[in-house]
Length: 107
Image (cartoon, rainbow, N blue to C red; front, side):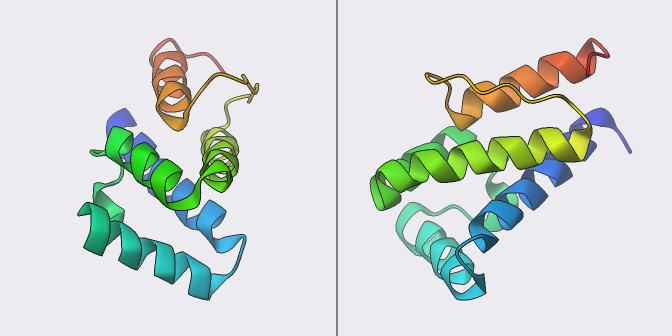
């Protein structure tokens, strides 16, 4: 599987896992809200990452920040990359970091 496809699938799975933390019903409700209010379908999240971040922030407030950190941790774990938390980073920053580290062969 190409590196970008692997990252894409890992990101979607990381989002699924993080949104499952509060339960399946909540995960489904969040996906429905993302689609109906922000026009972001589950499979489009990797392509609309900045919009996804804004939707989480707008919809969930500070809880969106917690969900993003959980998504980032899940993503790094799935790709076998060591995770380090940065207070100022958003999900977009973590995805950029993991792309760079994968391209450089770093873990």
